[in-house]
Image (cartoon, rainbow, N blue to C red):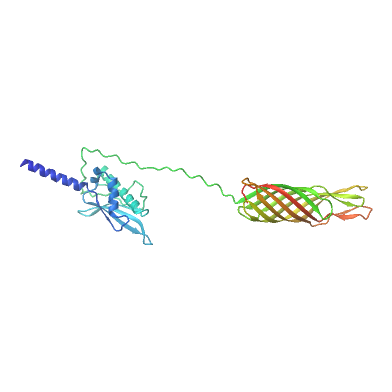
Amino acid sequence: MTPSITLGLASTLALASVAHAALPAVRASGQCPAPALVSEQLGAMLPASETDTFPDGAWLEIRELPADGGAAAALELRLAADGPARELARRVLPARGSCTERARALAVVAANWAAAYRTTGPPLPASESTQPADAASPSSAPLEAPASSPAPPTPPSAAPEPARAPVVTVRAASPAAPPRRDLAWSLGAGGGVVTAGRGSAAPLVTAELDLRRVGGAWPARLALSGAGVRTFALGDGEVAWRRATVALGLARRWGGATAFTSLGADALVGASSIEGRRFSVDETRTSLELGGEVSARAGARLGAVPLLMWAEAAAVGWAREQRVDVGGTAWSDALPRIDFVLTAGIAFDPQGR
């Protein structure tokens, strides 16, 4: 009789152990994720020695919480137990990612609940989480277990496993974007010749600064120029003059980064130095002049370097007549009021046209 009693008790204990070690059933109101997929993910996360940490009769329920458009905006996971039916824990997660990713996120929460039961055991403080949380976070809502439910026994031979440390991913910060520049500029210099309908021609040098909005087609220009001595005959002598000017204007530009053309208009302020030569008494006089200029320019970039070559033709008109009289004679004449200027130069243009 004694052997029969011993075998019967062993069978009973074995069956109870198997039933206790089973994972909780998973129920769901939708199909993404499917209950079987959640069970598969949870079983992969929990070794066989840890599945007995869930209370007897426990089951998991997944419920979709729809947004205004009807699609699932969040997933609610509940841990409940039968006899009598009671809710032990609840967690709400955002419904994002594939069905497999959602199943893995829900399984992580359930595994954390299992770890809480294993390390602390019921009863736990009653609490409920209703805010959406990141599925990859190892934290979970606290569990609630009624006082009437006895704590599952811990096998004396198995020491509690230490809690798993969260995985921290460190990513290098992306470099800060360079500050946006709304204003582009170019600085250039050139040389050429100035002439008129009468009198001699003279060399000319110029320096200029262009300012424009990035990608804009209307550059503003500030230019300084100086011309050499020009002469024309008057009686027994000659009249010589030279000018220095300051120009401020606007241009309309067409073209791209490699080549361009433009039409411009400038207001001029000039200083003219006029002198008589080979007269009985030679005099020198300086006066200010106002004028205007229209120009046409074409240019091209020198390969990949930020340099532009350009050539320009311009016509200059002066507002006031500058007349020269020789005292005691009938000799009198005026400086030309229309000048023609041909120039070419190079410009440093770091932003590109």
